[in-house]
Length: 86
Image 1 (cartoon, rainbow, N blue to C red):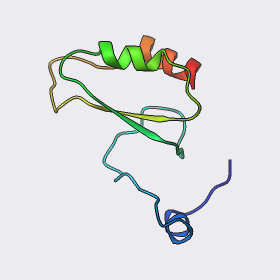
Image 2: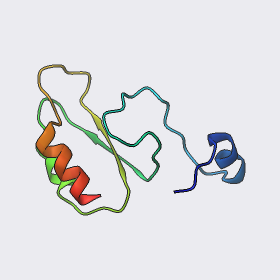
Image 3: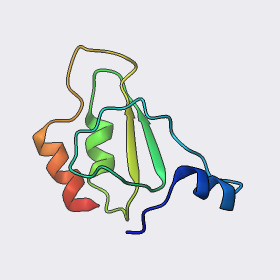
């Protein structure tokens, strides 16, 4: 993987979008990039599981749980599925 700065990326690509760094890192990768797929759910991770079971090539999934703290949306089983499917 080529390492680059966000400023250089934006200078060379007018259509690039950058996500704000407001998320916690739970994986082993410190640096990553890809097409962002946002999933909006509320207290139900069935859609997350469905999408994680699809084979993808380097997409980044952002899960919007609406701020609910009623349940976990990703645990070890879904994290393993995500790793296996890219």
